[in-house]
Length: 274
Ligand code: SAH
Image (tube, rainbow, N blue to C red; front, side):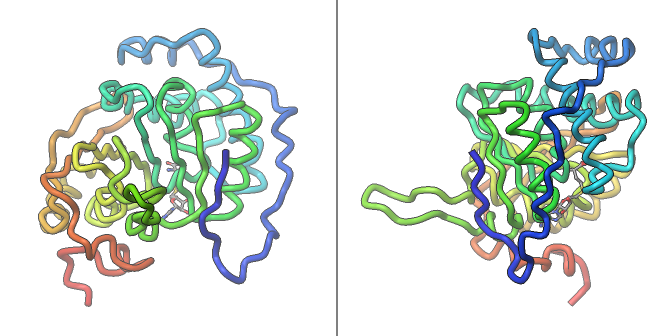
């Protein structure tokens, strides 16, 4: 279920911590959360809320060891983590059964794990660079019994250039242009994040970024980046917890993107940094 594709050299297994997640008791959702989810049109299947509550409890319990979130108050965490993640459902609703979604820079599993819990027919790849967080994700996914989740330790720059291996009938494996949807939250401003996410989406795929107050400002600053990446701003959707910026691919991503590790952040496309 979990395949670490790359790990940072020179960092031995000191992250191998047992988070003891099996013993963690589920949190119950506050009434307001259910009401707000209802206004979003979210209908939970039996068992979903229990799984979401277990995941949230695991995240807060492991936080002491792995620094996964600054939000530690349960009611606030239900809203800012679970509900905020689930606002993406309206964008993912159209993906057919068996479709693939990648969460870039998932951290402690947001928004990827709540989405994987409520969308069991889609296949999720959770991408995270940090070993300790990856270790938590593996243990949480196993404790929750999530069969539709694959956890990958690596960087978006590397995966975005990974075309897989040549076989007699085409290419196998790889991540570039393989996903029906690419999602991300709190990984960077749009001019940086577009380079990390757009290359992973299929030509027919969609990129959905959870953003806050600065969405419009960031989009303005990302004009050149979107142009270079041949990405199109489709919509900005207001949600109870923020905004979703939806991008599509006007054409295949030029080969040079994403650039090497760290470069998107160091010198965002269209910025004057050299
Ligand atoms: N999405 C989570 C975590 C946000 S913190 C949430 O909303 O809570 C940003 C995370 O992205 C960090 O865990 C960091 O390690 C990871 N990250 C940053 N740049 C990355 C990259 N280029 N590739 C993969 N992961 C990255």
